Length: 410
Ligand SMILES: Cc1cc2nc3c(=O)[nH]c(=O)nc-3n(C[C@H](O)[C@H](O)[C@H](O)COP(=O)(O)OP(=O)(O)OC[C@H]3O[C@@H](n4cnc5c(N)ncnc54)[C@H](O)[C@@H]3O)c2cc1C
Image (cartoon, rainbow, N blue to C red):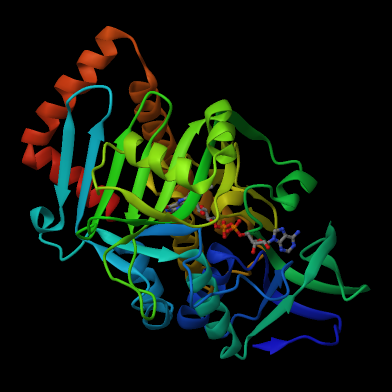
């Protein structure tokens, strides 16, 4: 990587706007699969997320085994996999309004684990380090996209960095600029968007009892509460830290944010039915509004949306970043295929193939989450009966359960 301190007019095969988990992964993956591709990564943040020795990043993701395989292919998994991350081998999901429960175990699908819980900051840092070793990638940090112009066979991007304007051209522009994608808006991609009327409170908690490498989730009528098992910080106890994602109706979430730490800990332990005993400590809490969005189309000539720019999904299934990583895997395959066949990158069929392969899969994942959310939010006696009976039935059907566990692990 060459950190650009001066910005010449340069031409690239791909300009990726957004160097978060999805955009930076695309650059690393292409670096491994198609090393002759010239790539610009344009990232608004200068430093990237900070990593502290004292505490975990409040934002974590549950990576599927398939996502881990992608990171291995991109040559970054070794740096991501540290003692701070945690391979989880079980999932325990139960309904707070009834008596139903479902358990998944990695052994049931002949895997060692179902996935890994890793801090976002650790992933981004490992990806940026990898980019530094790739001569075909230029990472523009602290750079904002100002203009995007479609010329005949190329895209012209104007950026501002350090108060100066710079211009570059590229065959393709990939929008990996997150849920509030400016490119998506600028290019007037149509979006279906719905507000859940819910927010997620995220933080790290220390629990009285060990998490046993299990991801725990309790469904309530107001939204799910997830305790995701974390690894070890230097000098701190193992197996007693979890990342909390407490999704709740906005009014309840606002109230929970008002409590002092002691009251919050006690409300949380109670809401979680003391499944891991008392909650001993809680870190700084952040409240994130939950919205589901899906772009009606992911591509226009020369421009493609990937990751949260194309779709954002309720965190209850921990699938958000995994779907984005599957997007960029398909996109990298299509770019590689075009290069092998000497098809120029501005040929729209490349992006159309990407959209065809990804959109229906993402829509299915989103519809499934939506169904779950409504089923568990309902107080209707028939739906409560259905979910209790359904969960008991489901828990006894090992074949069906294994299929779902395989789907979750990628
Ligand atoms: C509460 C919560 C819990 C979640 N839990 C999970 C989970 O357990 N598992 C999971 O898989 N997913 C989870 N997700 C979803 C996951 O965090 C997202 O899917 C993931 O961050 C999307 O990655 P991305 O790279 O597409 O976007 P982002 O992570 O948003 O990255 C976008 C990048 O683009 C940059 N950028 C933005 N605009 C510009 C611009 N104009 N110019 C240049 N750069 C720009 C930003 O600085 C950022 O670096 C959760 C989400 C929430 C809200």
